Length: 162
Figure 1: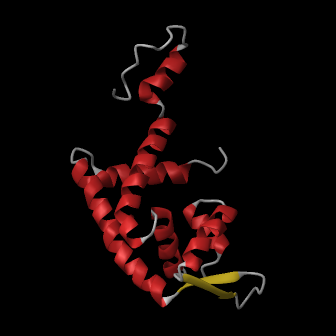
Figure 2: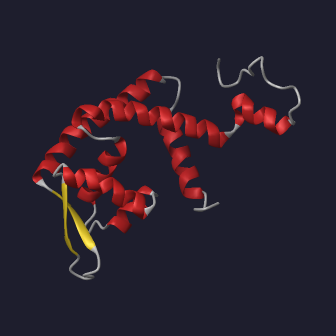
């Protein structure tokens, strides 16, 4: 069954709005469904490296930022600081990251990649690229640059909490 087909067992007592939602015409639910499928695809490619797409992105942000604090990375990744902190535990346990006191604010910790983390990020970037190519190859009729631009516009154009 495609997302636009209505199952036969559906009640006929629905508002037009509810019928539209259930027919697969909700932007939000369609985005969530696509997101879950993409996450599974990227996680499968990164599995050989022992990382998830979120862990891979976290390592990449730690490498990219001058003073990567948990708050700074959480802001860039648009996730809750406590969720990111919990996600850092396995990376630290595996020896991929460490931390040191912030030179300007002793209450903060600056994250850093270990040598093992640098090597893991480099190897995982190749797995990530395979996932990127696979998505594009599996959807040749979609202009991926235009899709990405639209998604970035939506994610940057909607206020947090709205």
